[in-house]
Amino acid sequence: MGKRRAIIVVIDSMGCGAMPDHAEFGDIAECNTLKNVCHYNKGLDVPVLEAMGLGNLGDYEGIEKTTTPIAQYGILQEKSKGKDTTTGHWEIAGLVSEKPFATFPEGFPKALIDKFIKETNCGGILANIPASGTAIIEKLNDEHHKTKYPIVYTSADSVFQIALDTDMIPLETLYEWCRVARRLLDEGNYNVARVIARPYKIIDGKPTRISKDRRDYSMAPPNKTILDKIKDSGAKVIGIGKIEDIFSKAGITHAIHTGSNKEGLELTLKAVEEKLDLESIKYPNTDITDNTKEIIFTNLVDTDMLYGHRNDAKGYGAAIEEIDDYLDKIIPLICEDDLLVITADHGCDPTVPGTDHTREQVPVLYYSKSIEPKNLGIELGFDTIAKRVAEWLSV
Image (spheres, rainbow, N blue to C red):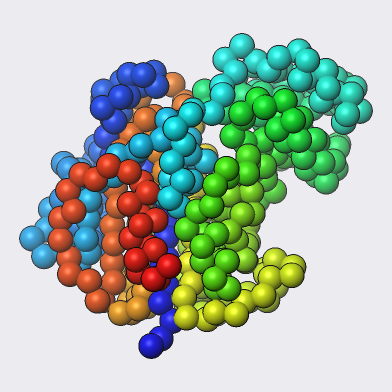
């Protein structure tokens, strides 16, 4: 028997309709990232996703319904109490979060900030409010340069974000301050999902975030996931994009960060072709003893970070089309022993009021030459993906 692989590609924030409990999360019934992006762009050109059956999941302008889909297609509703990246990815990997992560609409407590300032020796901080990341660095850049204080902010999500100009304060200092924040949050049981390093530079006179140097310091998953099961069996789990950050390195054997969706898609293509230089991205002291199974897990963040949060429906549509172009190259490489999974982790509808994530159900598409295409309907739980992968890899 050849090697069996599961290739999971998460199109970050490409939700497909409000969850029944959307109002509890402050969202409106009209939120539907995929449908509204299609409508805004007067249709999308996504022939591969269309052939897989994506159009059969709803009325998406430009994505036709098909009576001869090449994949299994369905809609997943989230069990976990959240609408963020960590919660969504953990559930995809089989870990349901019953308790929502904490948010800080009034900013972080003084006791926490005081400890952070003392332990980092940063001298002080700016902001400590919920804010748009692009707006806050523009607003506070001059003061940041004058004081050399980091910009600390949050959002509607459970995040402690630190922004600074890395031409003034070294990138490694930013990472170290993030590690301090992560430790303080954990020690204080603040239940914050992620600390995010938000480096920027002044480019053409404007503060500009440097996506490739972003790092997420997630709370460690409280229980094992399908990734741990595969790693513990001695097989490979390859994280592309911010996957290793989301799982705080748990269950990962190889990891590589990306600066864009294009880079993430290129690396996924290489991984599927088995042309990725795995030795250079392997974790130290990782012993691969089982080459009969493997997970390739990719997060494509641009849809969320660059377009969803910035209310850029045009850019969002173009990003989905770019993903489809790469699927055209990936699909022919998927053989009988491969399972390709295309899904999302939450919504971030760029066409509705606000810049935050939206509580949405997500599409799921399963493709392999050895499975029969069919309509899976609406299923409860992103963790149905973990169950499907576990069955596929016999763990």
